[in-house]
Length: 147
Image: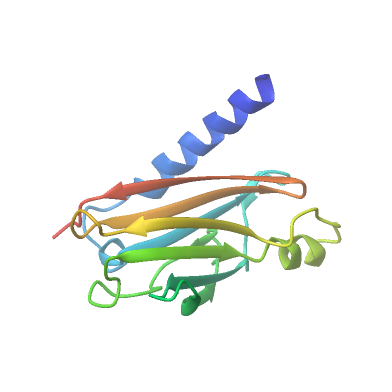
């Protein structure tokens, strides 16, 4: 139970760090940002492949955007406000490749977050993930766009 509380505390800190910074920057205008932390090393998870999909009318997943996390464990610039329309999206993190590159054999192939976006007006979404080889936890910060 104590480790669960510690995990929740780490996620809360991750959210606060993700939201800290200057009031308006080019990055803060991006409507979708991903932040990934490595719980084993206690550091940002660098070079995690991120794929974003949008659910089509027929229920299939269409590729929407992709990239890799930076030295800060963040991925900005995945989309623009114009392209990030109302819909259901899936953010998929390639956790297996990340852990394998570190010489660790992980349990999960990937971590994913499926969510509805912009169904109550335009919002900015920060998807945060805390990774370990045998588990992951995610949270999201949804905020009004900064003008």
